Image (cartoon, rainbow, N blue to C red):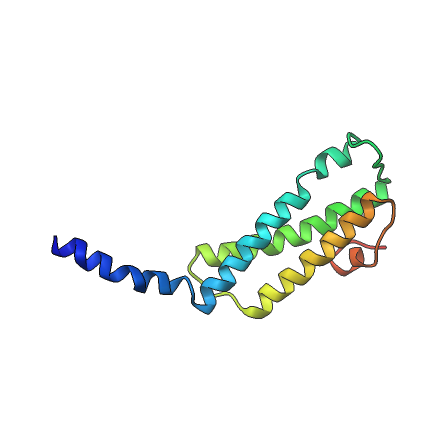
Length: 126
């Protein structure tokens, strides 16, 4: 019984851990990862020409793949650090958010037939 009361008494301390700056940075990485997967989910179908009204050129496909891979690599690197118990920095998370926003702009533009400047900002080209 005493252990249960002690455990209940420690819950607020555990909850406080989730509100640290590092926990917030970690959560931001996980949130970007989720958003990335939602955005990138239709990529294979688009690349295969299975989405009506969307036809990418080979160049646009290469740009989309490079841009997507850049963001994916960034996410993976940060998640590997988090899983390894390493701290991540606000600068790294900001860079990920910026690159994700560029990828989103790039991908949306490519699907509408344009190649936005944002593509070049994250490893694609224009």
